[in-house]
Image: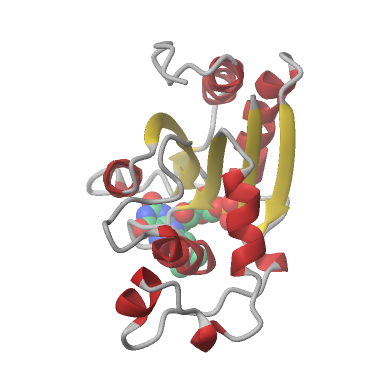
Length: 196
Ligand SMILES: Cc1cc2nc3c(=O)[nH]c(=O)nc-3n(C[C@H](O)[C@H](O)[C@H](O)COP(=O)(O)O)c2cc1C
């Protein structure tokens, strides 16, 4: 199984990274081929007016010399793409969101997509202080995005941040993340169904 992990927090040693490291342990247990990148190391041009029609016609002149085509090559070479992002206002972090906005680069005129059949998974952390669990909104958005793109939703793991008035992650969060990594390396989704 080839896995691409895309880190998307400005804090390279933060909460999301620590949860992803636990997942990564599970992935490595099965000798999965893993490529890890940090979206902050890449230049991804934000979408422009008429972007979507340009994208359908494969016209990316207005993106300039950015890194998006190389990033699409990395995704195309992978079986599973794992996004690692804190929740920012119920959504992906901004830099990661810009990257996902640009996934429309892979949509063709007949609305087929070059990411069809790829597994998509999410690792995310949040404040743990919510009127409602904001990670759920992000998970729903990513599951719907996967469906639109013809990708296979593998599931998500999340954990709260340690704050003076919130619990923070406990061992069980890291254990679930590690188990998820093991399942992904076998082409299984979060509940253990073989989908890839
Ligand atoms: C701009 C911004 C927006 C945030 N929005 C939310 C939110 O909507 N819900 C939430 O629970 N936490 C929110 N948080 C808290 C982060 O999700 C949380 O601290 C996360 O664990 C940070 O991950 P990191 O250490 O990997 O960067 C937000 C933090 C920032 C900086």
